[in-house]
Image (cartoon, rainbow, N blue to C red; front, top):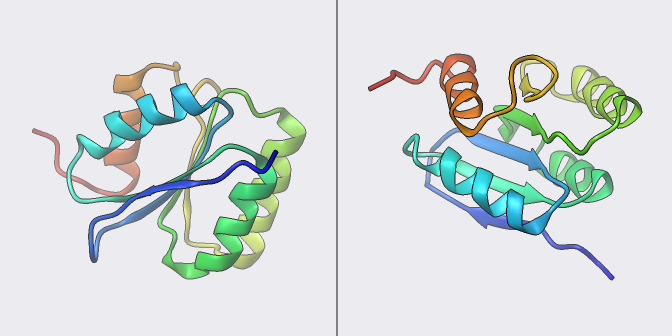
Amino acid sequence: MKLTSQRKETQNAPTIVLFGGSPVRREEVKNHIMSIGKLTVIGTLSEEEGMLALQRLGEKVDLILIGGAYTIAQRNRIKAWARQHIPNVKISEPGFEFAYSNQSIVNDIKFKLNIATD
């Protein structure tokens, strides 16, 4: 079964690639992220799919969000590739860098992308 990414796009907005593991949770997180405002969010469901999105988009990616289901080895591969190919990208790791909650994810994205808070 091929997993497909889903995209919610706002033209000329920061781009986030979301490495998710569950289609239901991916949608929940994407909806919370989109509440921030003008963003493009590409939600993927596997490491392979996420890496293909990163390779396709390259420097257009502003932030990579690595979901809680990813192992340390997977996280290390994603971050190593990003450091080599898109060194200015920001990385958000809920559950590793900070407490895992919807609001913490939104707060981290706002901070890393320098988006004003309400």
